[in-house]
Length: 375
Ligand SMILES: Cc1cc2nc3c(=O)[nH]c(=O)nc-3n(C[C@H](O)[C@H](O)[C@H](O)COP(=O)(O)O)c2cc1C
Image (cartoon, rainbow, N blue to C red; front, side, top):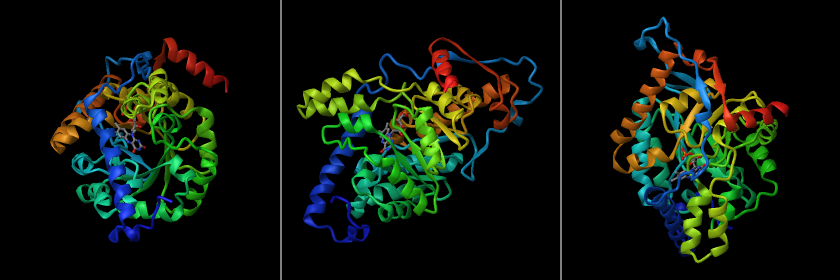
């Protein structure tokens, strides 16, 4: 079994070191591909283009009085924005996580690290994650693990260690069946994952948030997750970063023509983010995080008007994070300024008002809404 007790971190065996080298290489490839190659949706979109908010020519508020702060799982955020789960497990990730966490700390928002499985292998890899807590001592910080790893034996004990590694405020479990399938060395085994999530929820004293990685969570899946006690759902719909896309590049390099072709065919597969958000929001009472292809403050404003509790962004922050925390902050400040601008011209003084704001839905999104309305 690959998973080892974290106490073995200080006594790296040869086998562990060899495994760590492979994992590190894969993690680094994932980041490099996201930086260097086109990995965004090709023809698909989030469908936020099909959402329009209503202009208010008489807002009766001063721009400076607008308050974008909110609460998520009991933690205060200065704006309804979180840095989505990305990385860790390679030396390049250490700088990225440090810069992301520093920006989150300065802005008063939250962040999640990427899948922490690699952090169980060696101390130097664990440091590529825990740097986020050092750089962001006060931020809401999420641990992260994959559904496939749960079905491969990662249990409550390891999950607790991952949380301790970061002094995390929540555990994020990502569901990525399509990514596992296209990944040349993936583990597309999802039998029994919901029961494992249920066990984790029962055994942990931290909230468990369940997310996708860019293919979206449906209304039906959301209900099953709420029923086993998930604390929140992050929809991570399609229209942004494509993981079948990223893995298809890796499949090509590995000479795996089957997965290369399938990854291309299914590049835009998934429930567009705005549709997933609509379906999940009307199906569950727990908090819902909008994510997958959110790029601007206008996207965030629309998602909040559609009932999201928070919005997460991943890929657009990756390149800035390779440079500095100031670059990450610059991107996010822009997002927050546009969000507040939209709040101003819709007459919303705070996030609670924005979440009640009127909107219309057109085109394809209307069809998705009709489907979820019938359910
Ligand atoms: C470089 C990179 C690495 C990622 N690694 C993880 C991961 O380890 N765990 C996870 O839950 N999601 C991971 N994601 C998925 C994101 O959290 C997010 O759900 C997805 O990329 C869609 O959001 P976006 O379009 O804003 O990038 C990763 C995304 C990127 C760009």
